[in-house]
Image 1 (cartoon, rainbow, N blue to C red):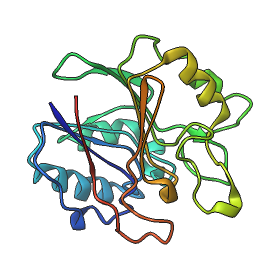
Image 2 (image 1 turned 60 degrees about the horizontal axis):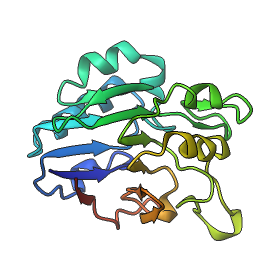
Image 3 (image 1 turned 90 degrees about the horizontal axis):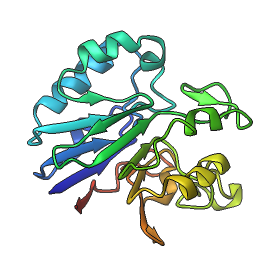
Length: 206
């Protein structure tokens, strides 16, 4: 089964070339600021070749944070996840969450001292962990001088959960794939730090 992975389109989704795969997973930051953004994104999803599409929100998706019911109502061409579990068509289990550590006043952010309350909900037996942001130290550098920006509590959680795949975006400057022990980490941000569309969606076969 082939899966197309991408995130952080920031309203540029219509310009992304999506290859044909079985599943598409979106890692947040479509940039939902109003219901019109949600409707436009949903129309775009409807043009894609994938039969199964799964999405989470990100820190730029304020409308999703404020209007959860409307996101679920209008995002009809995808399964929307917000700190919850879903079973993929191949029976793999995936947990999706938009939460990232607090930084200024963005959406879906949690204080670093209490963010573990979200991560504690992640089941141990999942195959795929889908979060908007990375764990500390793994594909989490945007601009080198700022250092690692990932979540330390999420890094601790990964040692407990041990998913086969951890899919995320958020830190545009660390696009790519890295395998550590039995987990493959994938930062699928399609924009760079200057918000230019330079990266392709990542395709994996599972």
